[in-house]
Image (cartoon, rainbow, N blue to C red; front, side, top):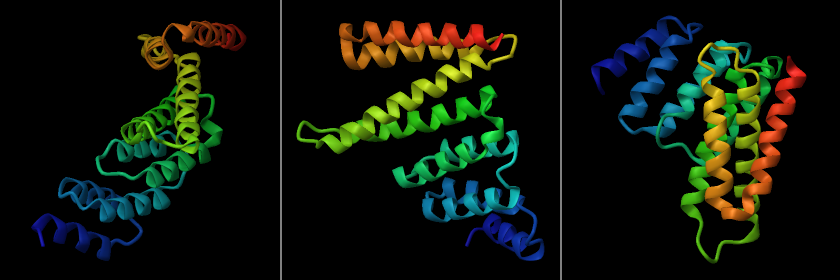
Length: 188
């Protein structure tokens, strides 16, 4: 057992209510490519912190960026994100949800084959739709000076619709951009 691992485990034993030990163990196990143990400690950390604020969304985003997750784990993280519904009018909420759906989209895209069934394509389309929708609202609620989510949405919207559907995607692209400007005007 690594010395760092012993240190974190003794911290959890001595201070069972403190969530930081679980967060540290999740990162440690992920670096060692023990993804199951990493996920267990990451979820324990989130349970102890509670799905309550921006910090939770940032923790979920950090966890979902780690390598080795299954689709089931990412779906569970997405459910946790949606569980912080009182922050649904913030850019961080929608950016975290969009990133989650983007990761799931890439994982599903890697499994596509010519003989894939309609169920996989339905999941694939759902992820694209959720990713673009959350990206749109992240851009709408972006109050920062840099307006980075607005640029990200513009590029994501263009790339996702046109890259996957070609020229026939222009009506969808125009519809999404129109919806974005409509939501932006309704918000202000």
